[in-house]
Image 1 (tube, rainbow, N blue to C red):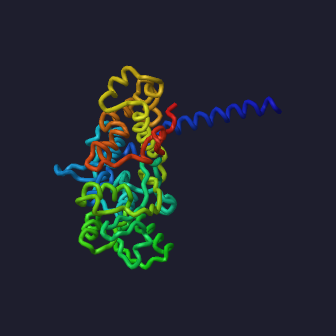
Image 2: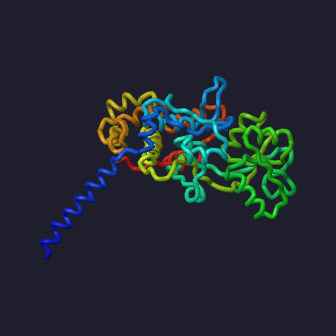
Amino acid sequence: MIKTIKPILTTAITACAISVTSMSFAQSPTVKAIQDQGTMLCSGHNGSYFGFVEVNDKNEWKGLDIDICHAVTTAILGDPSKAKIIPLSWAQRFPALQSGDVDIIIKATGWTMGRDTELGLQFSMPYFFGGTQMMAKAELGITEAKELEGGTVCVEAGTTNERLIADKMADLGIDHKIVSYEKNAEVMAAYQSGRCDAFGGWGPSLAVLRSNQMGNPDENIILNDTLSNEPIAAAMRQGDEAFVDTVNWTLAALLLAEEHGVTQENVEEMAKNPTNPTVARLLGTSPGIGERLGLRETWAKDVIKAVGNFSEIYDRNLGKNSPYKLERGLNNLWSHGGVLYAPILD
């Protein structure tokens, strides 16, 4: 009896192992579709969401989210210029993903339970953290939300900020009015013209606007209340785990490159003379990183060559090399006092 069962168990275990291995290396249908069409369709914004998704004076897209789109595009297609940015409002982004008008949403999008369970979305690992806050004119002399009794708060429609601010005001028992606008520029114009007492939004975005887009930063103050600490992630359609893997490992590659000192400038040299086994795997010197995702062995090296590591992306768009000079804070590596980390590349 035992002799009969053992071969059966061995055969079953071997079959399972073969099945798991073949599943692990199966190519993503979304990746194949992107390769077939020769472009990757990413969400943009209907205007400029400064620091993240914006249009420069040459009518070119730029920003942290745009660079991450370029990173994923490079991983899949080998060329960041093959990204096509589709302008979308906040309210349009999820229907556009569900209908196939975009392949992915990389647009300061918070990972929430409702979006995860009700909208047919799947999220990557978080690549940024920031909470909902409010900004008010310094001349009002207020520092907290509870001082907005009878006031008007302007927000962008279709964002989590709208609901979180309404919930906070209700919790405080504050009589207030919330006015929603389609575009960030419309909210800013309403705030600056005095049509609202406070500008409700995502904290990092408010900090960017205050530092560079609204005159003297001292004329505006970000209130002390932080209403959330929201994980920002890429959103994809459910059902294609291999595409989620591709996006997650692209984000991981950017963080691993920063952690190990691999930059846009030195990546070619580091690929020739890797400093440790992780860098050798990351840059394709030791094979495996490509086969597992159905991509080139050099996809991560190509990504870093195209956009740099995560710190280079951050500094260029939000930090010391940008007009905004926004401190990284939570969005630093775990080893530098932040909360960002990459999974193990084995």
